[in-house]
Length: 138
Image 1 (cartoon, rainbow, N blue to C red):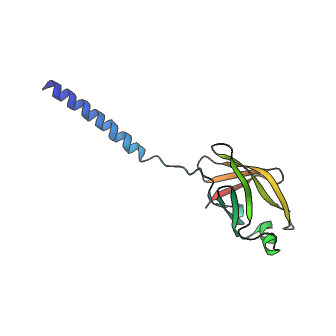
Image 2 (cartoon, helix red, strand yellow):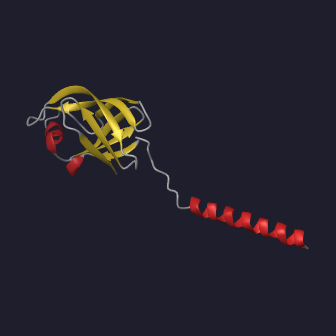
């Protein structure tokens, strides 16, 4: 009988630990650190959809890109980012389309680095010409 009580106690103890561990797992959330998806430029001026190695405009509502859209220099579906390549867990290299400030005229492509926040909700684009820009996941 003593052995039965001893083994029963061990089994109950292991079961409690196991169920506690499973309960803790339910609180773990998965962070989306994939760059693919819709991303909003600050002030909501445009939204870019990134798929694989390109990011295209799917909405343009303000700023220099709106001027470029109205002038016919850029349109929905055009690339905002190209040659996107993963360089680390939360980093990518790419090229970004530039628009000359105040005129809305396309100025060409610039190399940039994309760094995603650990929570997967934002990323920052760092280039040479343009100030660091934070995009927010839609």
